[in-house]
Image (tube, rainbow, N blue to C red; front, side):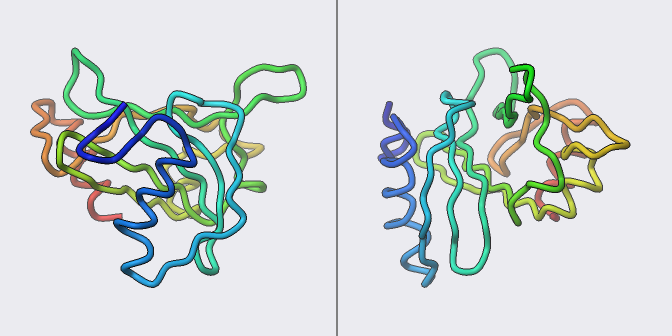
Amino acid sequence: MNKGGIRMNNFNNTIRNLDNIVYKPNNLMITNLKEEKQNSEYARGIFQLNNKTIRFRVSKITPNKIGQFVSFWEKNENMQNQAFSYDSAPDLLVITCIDENKLGQFIFPKEILLKEKILKTQSQKGKMAMRIYPIWDNPVSDQAKKSQILLQSV
């Protein structure tokens, strides 16, 4: 699959292309690159970017709704899907959005993911997926607009 000139067919190709377009020009160095087993539709993995640990996903455009969808979960000891836990979460969750020739990234610090109840703790279940709205999308519902503003201000 080719989105706006960026090959998105697997994690390594995606990271290599983003490294050339985004990270290297901004003096950011990728190390410890590791593809994750789960969420294969979302070019998923973990890596170091300078001194930060990153969990990485590419969002998907869905045909019937504005915005893009992304999932992020792991299997528990019973092989059931669950939200990632706060205790084992990397510093940042980076979600890359691509549509035609548009490229954007949502960068969520671990503390924001906790505050928004996305990460699992003993007192909260966490979330395993979400819909995001890049700046080029024009959501119509009030909740989607609020979410778009919130995400852009993080």
